[in-house]
Image: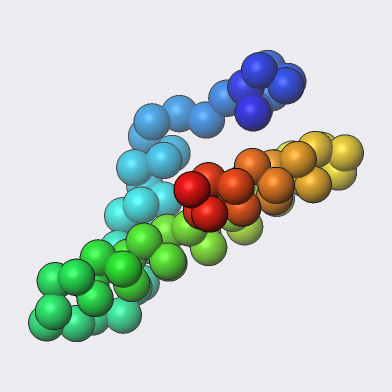
Length: 73
């Protein structure tokens, strides 16, 4: 996204804080694989919502397509 507009530069600190929040909010589970999947899904939702909140309207569809393609890979 940074190649599209210089406004779309996110800091590593912001990213780490978002991951920590997702980790704290994700459903607990004693099975490590399930726990990792819970964190992944929670983080992905939080990331999508937070990034979409900051995007220009014209770029939201492109971001959604990008996220979808990365998930499908």
